[in-house]
Length: 280
Image (cartoon, rainbow, N blue to C red):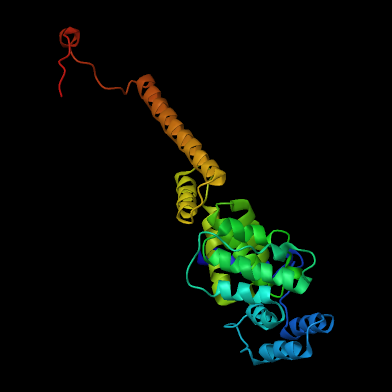
């Protein structure tokens, strides 16, 4: 695993992957976007001042990401953002999610729409709402958000848990194009997931058990609809294939043993002609 991780980091830094598809975002660039949003809005000046004060009073560093800093700064400017920030800070995990359809409305400014979709998707992925997390990040590109590494990381997390191996692997490869620009936890978990996917085979017992775990996760969240039933049916089909494969292998081994004369020795003819006694 260590060797593979080192190889992935080495290849990510060479021309093997070509030019990286995403760039880390600088703090000044995000504030410039925030300034454009404030200047083109009809917000009261006192609100604009409050937004700027929250931005500059936020601690810098990895502990407070640019995504969090932006979301908290936008809260006074938009009550919907404030509600989303408050919702994401609660400890309880509801089975019915609030309506966030405004995040898909083209009338919502792109700075708010794109980044708050990621903000919500991150919370969803952290709380095992993997289908919803992927749905809210669908269509977003690294260039759309202030935290492209978070977009790719949580998209990979959700895809991995949903056993969407191809999608997870492609997202992880894109994320690891810039390993030195990732938080340590992102880099290490990404390498572990990438290594884990190399041993995963379709319809294997490992593959089946992961999908069964996905069913348990969905049921724990109160999801018992058509999607869960589809996954369950897929698990049953895979189990049937696995059982059939094992039966075929056993029959093949028996046939080979019989052909080579390696079957069990037969008893005396007299004993074999006697009716067998049934025993419990």
